[in-house]
Image (cartoon, rainbow, N blue to C red; front, side, top):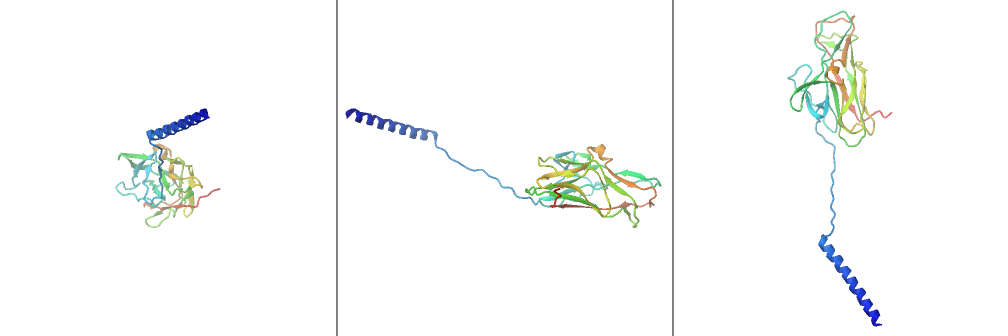
Length: 247
């Protein structure tokens, strides 16, 4: 009986020693505490600046195709936006009775450091909605090239060549039209971002570098077309919608 009492007492003392050690260890370590970290994004309403067509990780300031002193029109506002589209200047040409193809000047711009550069003509779209819902960009040449006195350059056709998508985004890229012959009055798809693609800023460049760009936007005028000693011009409407072609 004495032996049993002694064993019980020893066990109790051992348990007390373990509990004391546990409490002491907890006091020594200081305990455990949990906290949280979070961030929530929302669509932006700001205008996205154009980027360098040869280095889309950097911003750029495009220069007007005809008047270097003219301020280029800012892009559309909001989370789904057209940030910039080049204008096409085919220069001053001599009147001829031969069929001729003329090339638009490459896009001039200032890089982030203020240095003037020359690169491809391009159109830029940004999707910062945060939905991956997709989008589609179309262009329409509103009418035939027409002189200041109202005479049309009959049969003239503008062709956009060597088109390819450029981006710094890691999202799935939109599809870009590599070559297209513009038809006055008709809408034609330039870029299409299927659902699940097109997030971030994407450009369609016509040409891979300055040399290639100088021959990637062309205007062909038939020799039989009467040409007056006047300036001919047209306009383009670029339309961006949230209804992509998902086929």
